[in-house]
Length: 385
Image 1: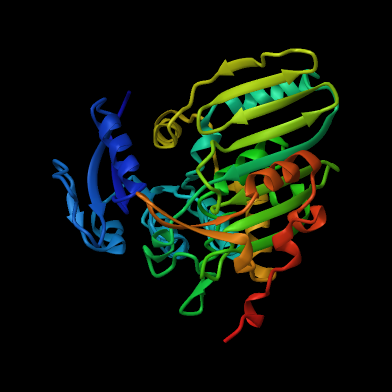
Image 2 (image 1 turned 45 degrees about the vertical axis):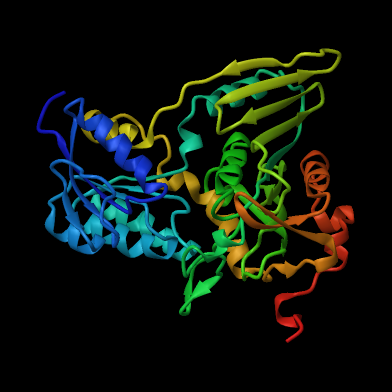
């Protein structure tokens, strides 16, 4: 390494932000960076040696003379903080989703271009070598003719989860777009990864988005969701992404082919190919590169970014469809079980897992398949008062 270590600042150091702190401290031990500053309205839970602590992210960006700014803050703060960091001459690692609107996303890209500073988006799964490996397998004809792509995520979240912050479960907050919900936030990785596997990265790669969004909880956003994304090349991605399952299952991306089925367990970096007539799938594990490390490599040595903001345009087309589309419909209470356990109070949609699997394997939405909650759902503005 040549030159002085990069000065890194992290805004948002609790929750998922703690993983960014850990990654920065690991890189700091190599001498490549210095964790110069952190910012959060809550103080650090433990001392971060050498880092100046700020209560305000903008103040940190303005005062700390940073080379790299990591933003792990609520989505509606992403654009103003990223613009401030770029204007201050810093490169940015921006947590997903990049921005709450497509127009904001285009402003972000323009600001990155004009400043000559990089913006990497925190879709960690796209830092995995499993993605190009899957693309190579498809290109080599291992699955035969690709018939469709799918994103499957059946998770469980408590009612307390939706009360953890003012923006949680909201479409807007004080008139500002937030666009929280299963598709755009907790299971956004499933959407982004499935699009990447299908070869869709830019906004022009998406021809159309068909949404079918529901909610079992008392929120504005979706928690029980299906969608179909038609791509410009004629292929299709179907997603079943919900937070109302009986238990959390490992999320995955599925490639249906004429000769075999491929499953990417994207949080595990594991790829399985299920061939007809074989009882055991061919299974491979793949390495993952941390996105902060990759951004540092890009700044210091010119390495290509793994998740440049421009490569998340297809995901942003999906997010924009959610933002501008119909609000999530309320699921009939008769189809929802109330569960209380050690995790808290949860709402569970009956038979969600079976219907979700059909979405992914058949390439149709809940409504198109005839899921019972799709027939009996109530639009947000028609709820009894």
